[in-house]
Amino acid sequence: MPDMGGYAVCKRLKNDLLNKDIPVISVSVRDDPSDEARGLNVGGVEPFHLRSVQARVRAHLTLKYQSDALRSLALFDDLTSVANRRHFDATLKIEWRCCVRAGWPLSIIFIDVDFFKRYNDYYGHSAGDLCLQAIASALKLGFTRSHDMVARYGEEEFVCILPDTALEGAEKIAIDLELR
Image (cartoon, rainbow, N blue to C red):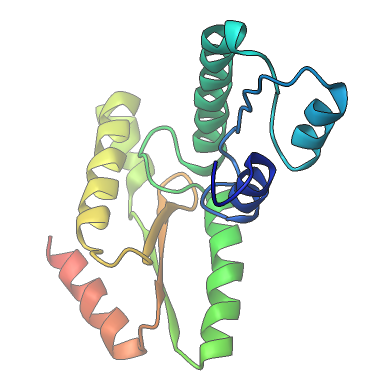
């Protein structure tokens, strides 16, 4: 590479938040173990020679897919596909700090589905699951900004984080959601 060496490229990728979780595989014609060690030290996952590229790329893609799936399971509610409570708690801390630092308001909308236990008891848990999915879908449609978050907070409770939203804006959104 004429402008930048492979080690520098790897180091730059690993220092970038958007790319830090992407495995970097180095391919070299060099056979020196110190080159391999240097590649690992700057964040590469596995140096190797050209003859084993395809098998190793497949292996690392599989690991990446599995890692993404685990991350999704850790952050999103399986039933409703909105953020889960763990993700909400972490996001709230980040958004709170950001809004305090910028001097912006932060609003939270808390939604508790009234009489859900009765609904579940009368119609059954499958119908209750469908109901929660419909509520989550309606909530997601109500938030168009990328930094707003809808999360499942409890069994029949949802919460929405609205950074840079004052009370009047949150009230309007809540009323619009209620009318859906």
